Image (cartoon, rainbow, N blue to C red; front, side):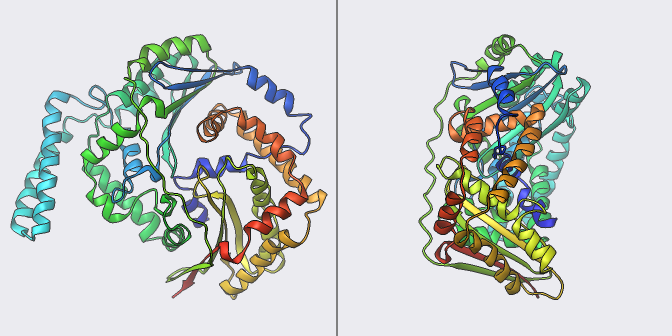
Length: 502
């Protein structure tokens, strides 16, 4: 469970959505439903480049909203890892009007804190302890003055008092998502709040939030053996692509981030053409467009950052990383695979399901139930994200009395069987049937639909690919599975991770 939490933290949308990209065994029951969805969906783009996807669902008087910023950990400058996640935290702190008692009085205090923080850092570098102590005393005094002008959780209070629920956000390697739901008659309130949130943000309480994030990293990495293992594993599996870096950031980078760093990152990436909004629920698309032009039309058009993400070179030999910590032994094995836009994406999805999707999967039935070598055995297709070429990752928690090497042999046997033996029609139909149920469940909620639509819109170029994926997955054959398995599951494409008890 700990590994699942570690892997999913900051990656929940990728994991959940990758699991729902699979079609039913037959489309006779689901296709009419999907056709209706497509007919009820409209899209438009404002003059400044911001795009909206609107899906009418009048079953209940509620609306779910999702703001998708096409920016994540991979877009961070070297030495400033964690800034995307830091910005997500600060996006809840308010604006020049929300979250403050008197912004005119607050602003000079925030500026002074930045000055003092820089002076403290310089004094520490110079080894001047007396100066550090003096500056720290003044910093704490100014911070206390600024705190008196802050209206804590003001955005959350406004949302809650208006009947809103689920106010939250997450940051992944590839995107930052902000979401919540409102009663249908609060459409304009969302337009007002969300547009102001990213038009005039104030990154207040920066230094307090830095401590929160550092504690979060300690909890999920430094004090978590599997968290440390994942960080080392990714660093070994990727040599140049920023997938190798943790979304939360490295400790030193987080400590050195400044409020100016966050502001620059925001100014660079939170431009209208890099934001896509989904509005799903009891709404009138014409009214959504009218209000969007009023509120989000205030944003000035600005060119999207032309970031060059390094291309990961082809792996040519097995890589291995071993850690000895106070932990139950874990075994990890990963293989490079192409991005979500690759023609074989559906085949990789099927392979992931065959091997590691639930208690009927091959890894669970063999390693956990039959041989009892592991307490759990699972995997992900599309780790740590899928916008760029990524990994198929498999992992197992070793059972007492067994070793990671035993687990490795058993896991490799199941993986290799896909290369040497065609999958039966019965097993292939089973995973497609499972996929149908998961897809229907994910699309049943307004928020689930919003997430799926934006995921495909931004990563593949069109939300329509969500529905095209059904046909692609249905067309996967046993020969496709064997072909892709032979090309992927090779020693030279393999990265191994061993977490051993010390």
